[in-house]
Image (cartoon, rainbow, N blue to C red):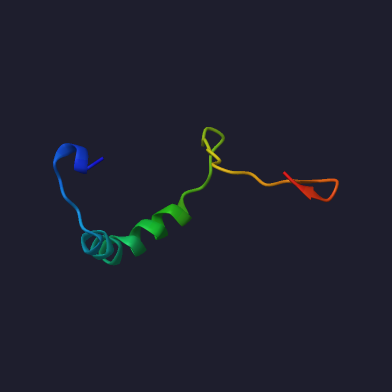
Length: 54
């Protein structure tokens, strides 16, 4: 999405961002209590029916 806007971001930039802000961001996510209006989107689901994975 950034590249579409003409902003070039390297892997090193992303790594530095994660080091700088990642711990605080994760802490805030853990403190947030789930609400009834939260929406979860699943990419893949694997279930076993009769011993076979689907």
